[in-house]
Length: 168
Ligand code: SKM
Image 1 (spheres, protein in one colour):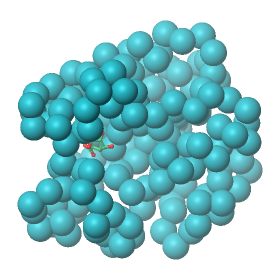
Image 2 (tube, helix red, strand yellow; image 1 turned 90 degrees about the vertical axis):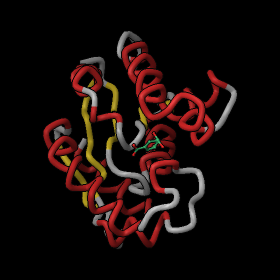
Image 3 (cartoon, protein in one colour; image 1 turned 180 degrees about the vertical axis):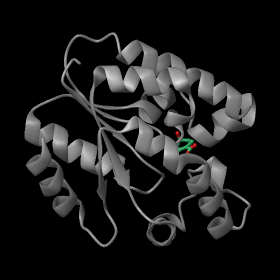
């Protein structure tokens, strides 16, 4: 373990917001794997999905996470919602430090991301049904990958942050 803190969880669980707050509090660099992919490609995530498909995006995500896992300095890393789908990512993330699952219910997710157009996996679908399917496919993987979890339903970011800090 390099002592990093890694946040995993579904879209809308607050990984980026909490990650930034946590990094500032712990005086660690904040890294966001989605943002790195956008930075490297120069286009947004929906465009990457359009041009390369989900598999192209996953390949980029796998490379970024493998690369981050070789850094010797600790960081706070916010991952993409589907990063845990790949076994190599799950292995690398656990090697890097403490993996925290930011868990939220589908209802809470719906409230938070209903109007977000920057999420290609949620476009043109029945959002409620799509989120339930993703949760069914992924919840076990989040739980198996994380060292521990925080349930964020009904909590503000500062409250989630306090729970994490108490646990570290
Ligand atoms: O990584 C991005 C991308 O839109 C895919 C994704 C997912 O599979 O849940 C979540 C986002 O963070």
